Image (cartoon, rainbow, N blue to C red; front, side, top):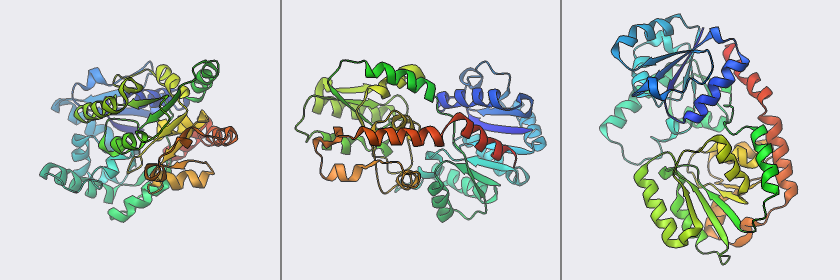
Amino acid sequence: MVVHLLLAGYKSAYTKKFLEFLAENFPKNEHVVVAFGRNCSQRINKTNTDIKVLCVDSLRKLPTYFRLVKQARLIIAHSLFFTRGLMLLFTKPSVLRKTIWILWGGDLYNYWVKEHHNPKEKIIEFVKSVVIKKIKGVGCLVKEDYEFLKTKYATSARYFYVFYPNPVDFSLLDSVRNMASLSSSSKKKCLIGNSATETNKHLEILQALSKLKEEDFEIICPLSYGDKRYAEKIIEMGQRIFGTRFVPLTQFLSPDEYAKILASVDAAIFNHNRQQGLGNILALLYLGKKVYTRSDIPTWGFFQRLGITVYDTKEFLQKPDNSIFDFDERIGRRNSEIIAREFSEERCVEVWRNLFSN
């Protein structure tokens, strides 16, 4: 039995898609999902799958949780964001030895990109360091994330190459791409960032874009999850500089709606100071869009290895110009072909099957 630990409600579109993927491609009776979080029973989207889900939302659920992890041959921790679940792992060294942590990004980097930490953050980080030291393995898409982890934590955890099925899948992207090609809109659109977190560093992008002479372009800014106060700050700044040309996305959208927005943009600028937003970036590259990301984060090296052409956000911030909308379609087509090959559903099944077999 494989037990999956996750935080209910966090990035629910990815959770929903993964549970569907799991049910469609693997024996349902071999997998159990354990979800943590407030109002877990209401927040976890069980979809239409028959995979068993245990919501640990009260103390009376703990005996069942402990029984499941004891019986499991393998435990998959989908991120380390669930603090209560992390504490429970901390108390069970025998469980850690059969646990693989699927790294999401912020669960590794959030502590290290901050200069100051409160006592609660320090305690959680201590617990996390003990957990990481004893776990069986770490799974992630970008191996540079694993290499960064090895510089910060004493661990012999094995690396597993793995990636999640994207909620905005290829078939959906193909359909919206065809629709976008029929659009008569001549206004250029630039998407910036992927969420309302400070690691997006939106303000630097907005300041650079304000220097462009070309005024007939629209800025799409996804802010539907993250820090609401930070989102309000970005909206205020964006609208003050660009007026109605700044379009914040503050509501959660269905994969169909979001795919249409991605298909409508001409360029996308990401200024994260860590690996973040890969689901958005991969979808945009599949659509043949021009994508900027920073050259000093692990994502850059990952794309270079695959032969994917992306552009340096740092260079654009230093010398912003209208060339952000200049793009050779042949590069876009080549990027799209690489994404289609490397991140197909068949390949996704293959990497998860390899992980489950361990």
